[in-house]
Length: 131
Image (cartoon, helix red, strand yellow):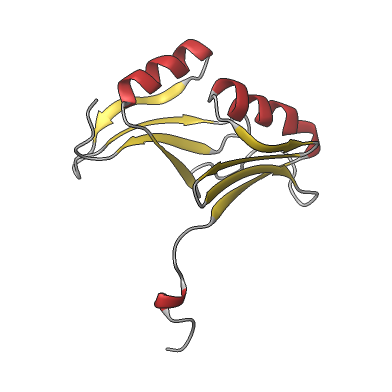
């Protein structure tokens, strides 16, 4: 099997969440106002968040229409240090969770919800983090 050596891939640079122009404002409000993420770049049809070398972008793409047809195809895990506090704050902000914080067999804790397009997101508290 040939291909790129795994040593050439150094990590994840970022994630793009595409939406259509009619849904962008709701998506932007959700990520900025409800989740409280601080935008690095915010302009018409494009909002970008950055944590070190990792970027999350929500942007308009003309090849996307409507909400997610397969919301479990890709899941965004948002790392938190205290899942119970983050969950409570998001519930107060109006985020509806399909799964409350729970401990996984691997020791971490997750809580599941969706963005306005129906994409699945999880709060994830790694094992060993205080909560």
